[in-house]
Amino acid sequence: MLRALGVELVLVGHAERRRLFHETDPDLNKKLLAAVEAGLRVLLCVGETAEEKGYGVGRETVARQLKIALHGLDPSALSRLQVAYEPVWSIGTGGTPAQPADVTEIVVPMRATLAELFGDSGRSVPILYGGSVDAGNAGSFTALSEVDGLLLGRSGWTVDGFTKVLEAALRGRSGSEDSAA
Image (tube, rainbow, N blue to C red; front, side, top):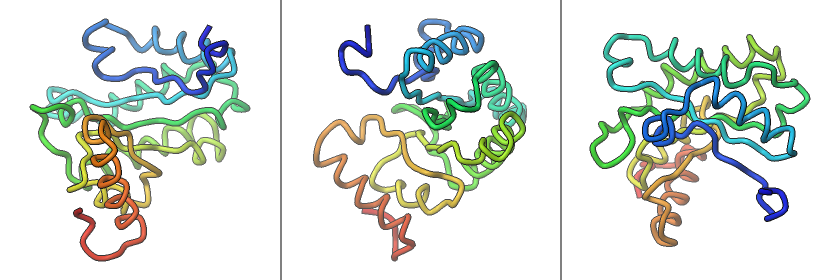
């Protein structure tokens, strides 16, 4: 039905859906495989809660989420996959903003997990960062070589907000001056 409506990309595993609708990792695996089978591109969200971060199991949590969600995915479908690191503890109005070191600590092992699952092809899967990104911090995340792009929430809801984040992200990617808008 989504293809008939012209939809090309679906978001699977967003933290709010996991929390509000109790979507489990096996549920997300079924959704992801069905979306790929239907010819859709998939943006898979993974991330740890504040509690998991506090216990020091963020990397393991994200690796588990990746391994279960991607179980059974044919490597030929990797070109239709993107993964977003979405630290649950950092998103929303009550979140604690993540720092680039927090992101690197998880994204580097994410890339290793993708390579473990799919060999060198796994290294080419784009990894986005999406944890309360705004014009003030976008450049610090796009400056990270491990981050291929951003997943925006509230900051991208208006044209002006989106434009400011885009400009900051481009400055961060190019390495020019202060990445703040």
